Image (cartoon, rainbow, N blue to C red; front, top):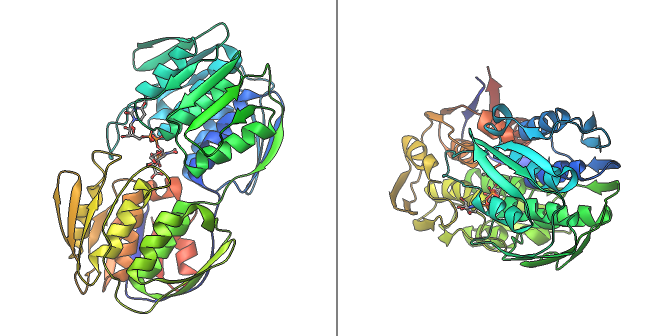
Length: 416
Ligand SMILES: CC(=O)N[C@H]1[C@@H](OP(=O)(O)OP(=O)(O)OC[C@H]2O[C@@H](n3ccc(=O)[nH]c3=O)[C@H](O)[C@@H]2O)O[C@H](CO)[C@@H](O)[C@@H]1O
Ligand SMILES: C=C(OP(=O)(O)O)C(=O)O
């Protein structure tokens, strides 16, 4: 199992190019199931989750051609309308094949994703929405069996805001008969990126970027070209790294207009930033100021950045409070950060952090994707050596993080 060995205490300096967003690429790849035409995608990140998704899509009969960050999909010969447990269990986003398969072929069998480290993460809203569109759904042996003659447009109000739920229902509605209204839709930029691709494929969608999506179903969609949006979470993770370790870095290929909540908090921490249209120069020459925040849906503070900001708070000059409102168990990094000498206590969904002057390296265990990133950040700021175990979580969602960090002067290497 791969590990990362990090000697902390080095300031970061240089340039990092940001990859395409995992959370946009995964639904966008699933949109390949909606058409017999070619989807020509660029800026697709080099990630384990993308490889898993391509494998999953490939076994349905979708043709996949990959050349670096370019992927072409062709859905003219899909025969297997299934997502097996073996693949779904390693990547929850596999549930995103359900809506497209059902809408185009009238049938799908998809394994239930089950819980994971950060929470129970049910998919009841995906199912409720598809049932409202006319699907018959049963659950047997851990699988969702869905079928329909033709989905029929309707008004759907989800109980809570769900990102992949919105994406699944949006994709399904593009091929439904008549009008579908998705109320309480997620406004995350990755949902918007998917919606733009669907429009390029011939879908009729109004309200893109709002919490009310109105879709007029069309009989079929065609091929399209699309560049996946830049990863705002990856970009903000590197900004947290420089905020914690100090230095002067420039990020390229960023989308600075979709990062307001994180950028505001980084400024409050004392990170000096020069923001261009697609670049950010970030300088940190002092100990961070602590910041308190609550995670919320976009455009609020993203849960996917909670752990990384907590890592910076552990070395900040004072105390802070972090409340996680999206997932019920997203503090798995706290115990590991405390092993590095952090002073964090939790009470329910709130963590209280007292900044310490110096973390000290130790062996730690990554428990989920963003927890892994937060441990890397803490290790970069710590004195001495940290070994981060179980980094397969990190590889799910970061494109060669250790290579990008080495290039800006971090002492970090992968060991087998
Ligand atoms: C691949 C992808 O895009 N993953 C992102 C997506 O996950 P994902 O789409 O799984 O997260 P959701 O937005 O659906 O989850 C939000 C909350 O709603 C609950 N819920 C959701 C659906 C449902 O049917 N029933 C239900 O109870 C979840 O358990 C959670 O507490 O959005 C999350 C919230 O921004 C991010 O952390 C993930 O990185
Ligand atoms: C929780 C995340 O991803 P997923 O929904 O794919 O588990 C994440 O990207 O932080």
